[in-house]
Length: 362
Image (tube, rainbow, N blue to C red; front, side):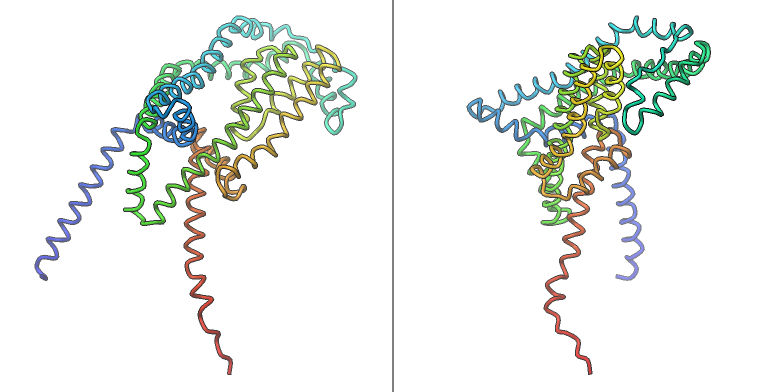
């Protein structure tokens, strides 16, 4: 057996190299579809209970339930995309006129009530007075670089709208396939996890699904409710570009920033334009929109998965910073699985340690 060891080592090394090359090639081939595939898995796992309810309402017919869910998903993805693009196109002329009028803009003096706002009123009034005292040329010189940067960013984003639309459609197609064969895919994932790590691997897959649903239920639903309430308030108050601002509020709410950065300037604008009554009403509504998520989000997350809220929030924020929007789901899933495996590993020796006899002291 001794002379065969070098040959076995060479054969094993070549097998590992071939297997690694095959895996790398497969990853390289499916790389353009990874984003759409990941989003499709997250959406399918999050909305699977809705599919089952729809199937029950439709007499147990899976095909009709898949069609209904797919059409609903298309509306959810494409309707905001259409309205946002329409709002930008319709207001493009006004945005261009505003950019041209930067050289002649003259800021009025701050309203008297601004200095009376607690904590920040005096500093805002002082800063406003400083800006009002500057000449239009200086204001234009300060604002032009920001406007130029925004225009360049917008042009770069418009160039990728076609690719974004293709990703949307590809995601919907994959979601429809997962809806149709969800049980088969779930069994395959369980078998793979069981083969990889035994019972703990299968439990990790189920925990990942619960974490995805918890984030979708807590973060996304809360962001949608915040966006709806804030958008209605902006429309009723007559704030310009309400559609674009509403889309921005949704992105900020998903990013755990909240609607405050949009609602605060809108409230100041309403105070200056429509008076104290409308301004105070929007201020109260803004406080409600910016604070009710502190109660709703933890409640919804706890219903989705019995995990520490700090773990979920750390995963949401860290995943968002590390991976972008899709990190909202990837971050909590990774932390939840790691946390559960760590707890299981630490608790394995607990009973044995308690059964050990105490040390005798002589």
